[in-house]
Length: 451
Image (tube, rainbow, N blue to C red):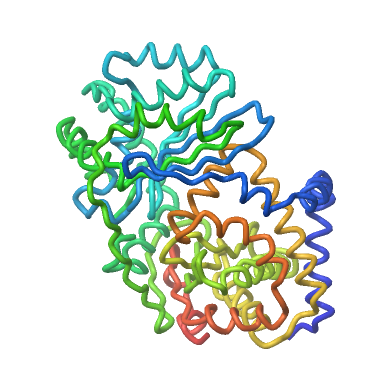
């Protein structure tokens, strides 16, 4: 087992490598430290329009505006037969609106430099708008028209279907896609997350224009929606626009269904045989959610684990180009370790050894400071755009229960201690459920099950 000095040396080596090629991160961090997070929280106004919750963050002086209309529920809105219908509906909706043909939509958006995008996840979906402050009202009118009164032209739906089907086929053809499918089937068995929000080839092909229209009518109720806006606006500037658009939607009576707990009671190994040049391994384990007090320590612990795994598996053993450790931000949350390698047993054993190290050693506080500083720098840089801030507010509102928690994140990470790291490593990094795609003959089961 490595000494604490060796651990610190490995992490410092990686950080030095990253900082050497990303020196601008240091300047971004020093600027970010001057940010007044209390003032940022105070810049957010929360109000309702006919049951539609609105979060407005005033970003004084910003020349850009970002908007996100979020649909609550995600995988809970669908089942195995309707998987992907929300994705198809939203992408079809932004093609054209009533009295707003597709060509006119493209021309008008291009003339003002506005962009629309659709995102889907296990917990929510959204359509986002990015534009300039000067052209906001025009862009918002196009945006709201498309979402409230979409045309759903059969030719538009057919074209969007083909785009989605192409993406699905490409995803299913790669080993990472096979791992994702295994995770949905095995880790999320009996859980709403097993309903694929992106859809499957068979479900996407099955939806008719009538199915899309009916789903739109069902889902577009203000009680199921969240509207987030970031820009140089006050409530009085925004509320009339919302009242005349999304505020006219039916209120409905949406109530979220509670999610069941995931099963991490014992270690498991599931193998999908495939003839590949290398083997793909993903080990999934439980993780605290955004609303859990353990979340901050777990985020730092995963960042440290990522560095250790990278240094050991790629740097010292040279078994993989990109070994990784990661954590999701879901309401039923998980974390994972992963690797692609020709020697899966040695690589997996090395990753598990790094977890044991975190579980058994109390790290030098300087290690945590170094990792936390680098991690926070990346966080700050990720929040530079108005659109990123829309996503952050919505994520905490919809997954953690309150947008206000997003402004607790920085202090939460900075206050993590060595004992916190050891605690979460022992509490969560256990009973790892491994998914394997590749040569089954290369697998020594005990490597994965004796944790």
